[in-house]
Image (tube, rainbow, N blue to C red):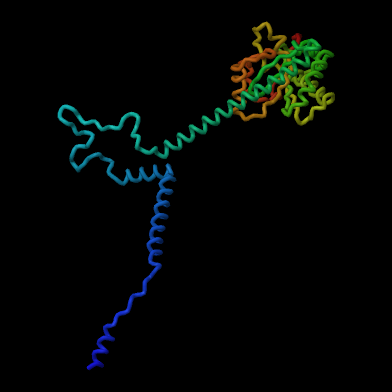
Length: 334
């Protein structure tokens, strides 16, 4: 009897469970997982891609009915009236403030911003270039003034750059001649060192007035004479002032690019000239702004000529100087 009781007591004997002291790690890991998911969602919400959002919106609109009817066959919400006072829920002219911009609007705004920034940059570059040219003008004027030759040159700022005009009267060239006179050499020798210190290319352009050459001269026509005069100036700069030949260009335009029309009293003397063009190194967009900026910004230095309409039109034409000839037996200053 006692043996059976002992077995029953042994059978129902209970032992204490082992306590797990690391169960808190599971809850802690769950909490960290939830926090990580929360921060990922917040980060994703802060990085909205406008283009993708606009594409999503357009796709969502296309996937739903474009009608504003609540139920098929009923009137639209915009058409509901409330007795004598109709309900007007149309979008105001300013647009829906909650509506995201479309892809086209985003692209258009970006292009407008780029164009505005580019225009401002071009204008600033043109202003800086005009200021540089005016410093060159002052240097040339200061070099010519002690000799009293400051009135033998003119200045103007065009889309090509700074144009230093040498009035080719008897001071520079004799009639129908391409040989530089003594006073002309003094003027070139005053300008040469200034040009040699610049990084710009220099284009020497010869021009004549409209009077045709005599058949007794050694030049075929005004094209030939203007080119020879430009070459004489280039030769002086290379031989005496050692300007690099690769920076120099000579061109003859004959009578095709006058400063003054033939009806102007200044035409015969003013159109008979050699221009030294300090070439602009800028882009075409900046070059186009140079004359306007020069006109808008006053100068305290030597007077500058405005770019004549005839020359502006000629700049858009071909620079080929070999296809036209002029023959006549009339004499006159060139």
